[in-house]
Amino acid sequence: MYQGQHCLFYTQPPFGGALVTRAAHYDRDLGDGTHRLFARLDDASEVPVDGPQCDPATPTAGHWSEVPA
Image (tube, rainbow, N blue to C red; front, top):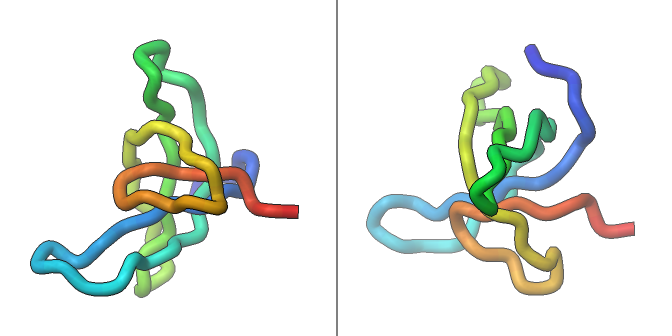
């Protein structure tokens, strides 16, 4: 399990539905506007995901944000 800065990753079911917020750990900037994260799944495993950052006030599927204060 990766232990970087805690953040949030947003996903959406493949056929639509409500946005899902997942706990994630920040890994690194990939240099192309995206970042590598490790997102926690429902079974508590973590998978690497790449995505751009978004404002936590307007979450977007496939993006991540810092945890709001």
